[in-house]
Image 1 (cartoon, rainbow, N blue to C red):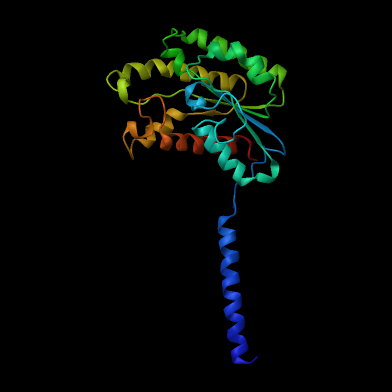
Image 2 (tube, rainbow, N blue to C red; image 1 turned 90 degrees about the horizontal axis):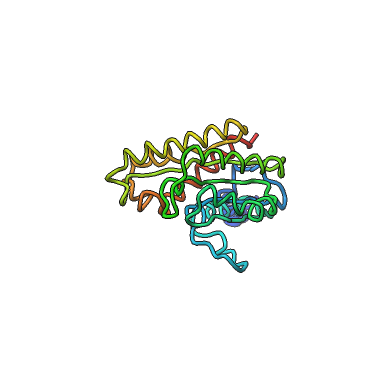
Length: 248
């Protein structure tokens, strides 16, 4: 082959190879989400941590998911598997306790028939201007809610998340006592996950570990509500647990 022709071919092919490599680097490489199928619905339920200031009306996808871990998960999964057209819904309501979820459960969960249901509730059952919920009442109401869901939606995959608390804001001074009380509700969630054979997310451990790298307020500005970095940790752990539970 003529030396000049060879040089010209190299000059043409090298940029093409580099472009192909760049495309490979941008493409999702390992997440397959075998538990998510075409047109599935993923529903996030809970309190203000899930609510994330979401819009209550309209269909603007930049606002109806709120600004939180649920939004980050919708963005991440949606970008990974766009061809499956997964639908994401957020029905978290700020201030809700488990009894408030139960009161609206039929319309906000059962009727929506999600394929994946994620539940995070419990912090307001301990800290609420509307009144606290005893641990026994918390567990009994949550149990009834799950029983109703399993009966009505037997194929729905459910994941539970434990409530969490960090020593920041007004919770810093009495953190030890407050966390000891919250651990009772965390334990109730674990018992329910065992009873119904559901995966459970230990967000407390995630945030406890994170404080080795940055102070509590970096992750949860007031001890309860995560910052953007805190929500990113939550989204990562949600993916880790769901993939471990349903990924095979």
